[in-house]
Amino acid sequence: MIPKSILENTEFKIDDSIQTSKTFKVTTDKMQGYIDNLEALKQSIYHRLSTERYEYSILSFEYGIQTEDLLGKESTYVKIELKRRIAECLLKDDRIISVDNFQFNIKENSLHCTFDVSSIYGEIEMSRAVNI
Image (cartoon, rainbow, N blue to C red; front, side, top):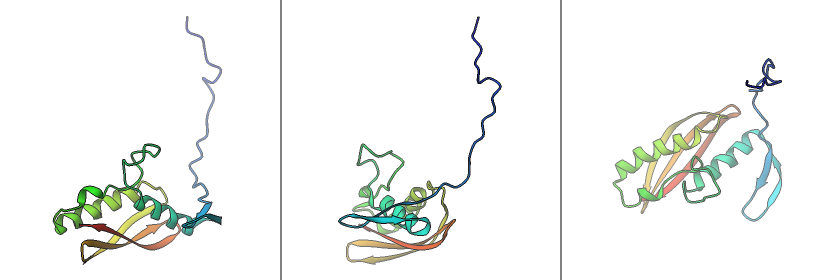
């Protein structure tokens, strides 16, 4: 005989509305008040692209971007991989709709990439550089 659950005929509502993005404003040396919406998303993108994936055991393996293995590779390969990895990294955030318009410039020993992020809050132009 299997006991019956009191929750068997209960209906649960799932709240799939967009949650607030209010967070602390983090500067290089301190936390300074709060930010929300577009500014909070910019900060989140900056942190995701500044965190090397798999490096910190406290963070999920889904967080960050893997770039260290691109060092010493051919610039054509790095452009293709960096574009894919940036999009993969950022599209995990449900506030981001698309990542487009990638442009690359090689300066000395680094590849500079600028791109546009379309979000539910508006457009953001971001950049990322990697050593090659």
